[in-house]
Image 1 (cartoon, rainbow, N blue to C red):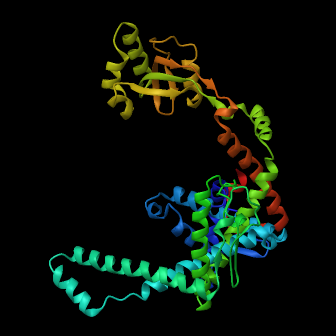
Image 2 (image 1 turned 135 degrees about the vertical axis):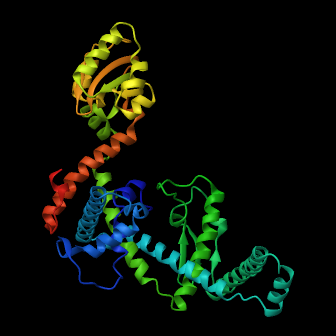
Image 3 (image 1 turned 90 degrees about the vertical axis):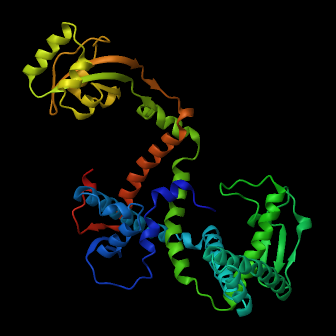
Length: 424
């Protein structure tokens, strides 16, 4: 079964952690222990270097760097918690896990054999000399000619190799048995140590059975090619054990999470009930189009307010006197602002303020403000059917926090660094 997108997002650091399994052991600071496992400073450094933020990391200030490292450390610890629990539940022994591991192994071996085939193709010296002479003034054209030569020979070599391997291992394809309503165990390919049934082909990534017979037929041809070349790679001694181990260490936690999500959300009614108790998930705050003027002292603000009440424009005065760079550059028009995100003292001043009227002076840490409301957009409450994914994500996140806490107590996580996250 393919990993769901949610699993990949929630366990994004898992592959970062376990890609380190084959690296040389280096004595380093242990940042956390998870049962019998450790997360070291070297693990974290490599995770940072492998993260999508690696190129921006050196430009971040210290608090931002610390926040990123802390987040990755928590993810690495969580990944090990999930691995320990997956092993306790013996997920490695499940047919699903064995099937997924075998499929991944076949894919690795297949790609290695394709590389092997490409390496067998050499451009004859006389042919290469002719190309060099023909395209002596165009290196790009020479490179393209070489690639075209190799590509054409590669396709022919791969086709001939597949024919040879098919005959060698007595492979038979039973295309006549293809039918969308055929049983899952319908045998579609067989040979020496090779076997493919309809169940291996007829389901898409979401687990739904295919409704397009031609798509299933294409899957059969692709599967046959992968299995033949993977078997050939294995016979010539290609080793993919390191990559396979890393994949399995990543896949086990994801499998566990998928099982927990299925347990937490057996049907949509669970999410509907959760939404009724957390209606804020669908609340869209009202918005106000605000004009604002900010000065340094209350006296200045009071004086400017009198001028506005006497008929002068708040916007013209903001363009001259406001100490807020953004507001001043826009002559006091700061655009649409969410009512729910305004500071309490500002919200209090705006509540009940009629449109196009100037507010009382409002003091904040930025200075002394005058406001006016240019327009309003009424807040709304979305229905569940409009935001099922948001509700699902919130529900899973809540359940996941509790589950991680449960696993942390079971496997005794010990932090050897100050971890601010535990207080949040």
